[in-house]
Structure formats: C-alpha cells, structure tokens
Image (cartoon, rainbow, N blue to C red):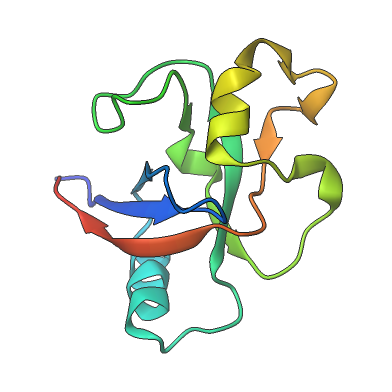
Length: 117
C-alpha cells in the first residue's frame, strides 16, 4: 500500500522565511487544500512537535515538524508561539524553556501553497 503524502509551504508574520511541512493524513491534506482555496477560514494556522533534524524537503532549516503531530488551529497559548527564524536561532533551547515539549504553534503561520513531493 502506498502512503499518501503531500507537502505544503508556509510563512509567518515576517514573510521572509518559508517552511515546508509534510502531511500524511488524507483528512489533513484535504483540510490544507481547503485552507489554500479559502474554503476553510477558521483552522488555518499550523502547529506540531519540532524534531531537531534537517528534513530533505526542508533543507534550509535544522529542524522540521513531526508529520504525525501536525494539526491546524485558530487560537493557541502564547508559550508555543515563535517565528520560523526564532526557532532556528534558539534550537538548542527548544523543548526546555523555549517551546516546552518542543510544541510549536506559530500564530501568524499562513499556508502559501502546495510544495512538490
């Protein structure tokens, strides 16, 4: 059986950085596509657990989001909010005082489009 997967690129409030996530859940893939089409307007921000390893589909960054933990949200607590660049610059502290539990929920995350698989 072939695993279904799709990749999506997002940015944050700084709109300079681009970050790619990989989705393996068919319902989440459909949800992401509804966000991009404008059909979904509530649960539009990305969150998940940071893995401190570079992913081949996201080579610019020293970390990626664990695909099994990715969700979409509308509101979250402040303790998990950080920009893409802030996470990279403070990766050594992620999981401790910075982004406890390695949970990341960038409030200003905004999907830009689907990326190549």
